[in-house]
Amino acid sequence: MAETVRIPAPLALLAELTHRCPLSCPYCSNPFELIARERELDTDTWADIFRQAAEIGVLQLHLSGGEPASRRDLVELVEAAREAGLYVNLITSGIGLTRERLEALDAAGVDHIQLSLQGVRAETADYIGGYKGGFDRKMRVADQIAEIGFALTLNAVMHRHNLDDLPRTLEMAVEMGARRIEVACVQFQGWALKNRGMLQPSRAQVYTAKATVAEARARYRGVLAIDFVPPDYFADYPKPCMGGWGSTGLNIAPDGTVLPCHAAETIPDLTFQNAKDTPLSEIWYNGAAFNAFRGTDWMPELCRSCDRRDLDFGGCRCQAMALAGDPAATDPICRKSPHRALVDAAIEADTVPAPGQQFEYRKL
Ligand code: SF4
Ligand code: FES
Image (cartoon, rainbow, N blue to C red; front, side, top):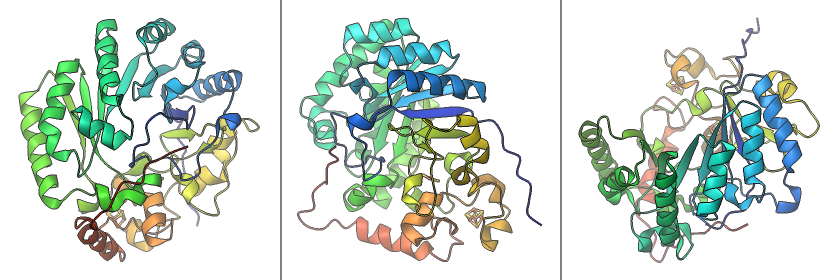
């Protein structure tokens, strides 16, 4: 008998306001096909979406991209979100933000800023972000964020080229007045998969990073909260991606396509609805894409009969698609997966970089 799945209200909405971005990070998790400016939703449509989101229970809005500051109407969007009663988190590289704009965003009601950090010195950061002068501009914006008094989280995506700088990364977070840092080892989704061979850290780097985080958590207790996302490939069990498919939040692409996660479009045969023509509540509760991997009926027997199934929900559907070619397979990160050998082989291959290998930078 088919199970009955209780669908909770969504808690968070990630609004990808634009795919435009001055940086071209090789680890970008946005899809291969980016959405051009002409197809982006306008201000009023986003405002309506924010109202609908609040009505169905969303509490937190994450304004993301691309670079959300590339939207000229960013302040108006924040005002609309606050009017809808949403907690507003702005996820930004800082490029495109001036003191004047930050003050306007503060007045409009931004609750929290999440600032990305590509590296701890200009040479590394500008190389990784593919944007000369980006580091210095970001440092100026970080000072202004502190002066205005925004709640700040530093978001450091870590990989082979910057993991050795983790101690300095943590120090910088404290110096910037961040209350929290997310040390997120790169996830190989979207464009990042193209650069896996250049980004995958070595085993030694991963062990050292874990020890550094453990020591820093004790040292910075009460000063800086440290979230650490270790690299998937080195784990024995997968992460509970999105807290389980269609269970905690939704992502909306710049053109209004509503997705259960940012990489969902890599899964063929799923049809995605658009918030321009279908109410958000209909998409969340009854949308075929959202219901595709809810509950446990879709799971392979390996996961359905496993005592971790309510902890990790079988892992990440997009990773199962990318590595095993089957979105309904057990995530190949899992030691029990028949596809785990693919992950181990990838680690071995990736950690010996090919001579002359270069980043493939992301460009719109
Ligand atoms: Fe998670 Fe499935 Fe592996 Fe069990 S078998 S640990 S549910 S991925
Ligand atoms: Fe899509 Fe994990 S990124 S389910």
